[in-house]
Image (cartoon, rainbow, N blue to C red; front, top):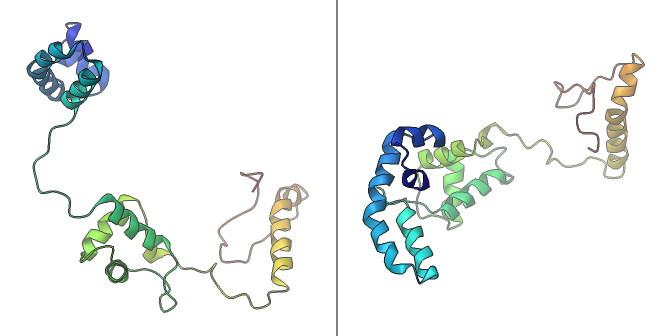
Length: 185
């Protein structure tokens, strides 16, 4: 609206702000009708700020209101990030639907809606296998084995420079420890 007051064209404003010319035109038309009422409030800064905010706010959009609140969507996504119950090795959409209903997050929801929410955050729980959440066979020896593996990964760059090749035989065989991209890790 400041650019409009400077006498600039819709096209120039749209190009500068990266907007569509029609959008600039809509706002240009909206301002004069509400802008006249603002002069009456010049002596009341608090009311003036509220009136300007109301004038610049988006108008209600057509269509039906959202079926699920942002909180419900977040709770469903949070379930997908949790370890599934013991009888499941990964979450599927039907499992997430049942769990959301069982927890009382929603009364009912379709698998398609759950899939849409997961796609919005690029989450694919059906492709996750929870291999890190296994039972440790020997709890006494396990910390030592972890230290040995971490030490080797830490020394991988030095070993590579000495032409000693470190080969990983764990579940992540595609990872090569040739350089330390994250030194403190």
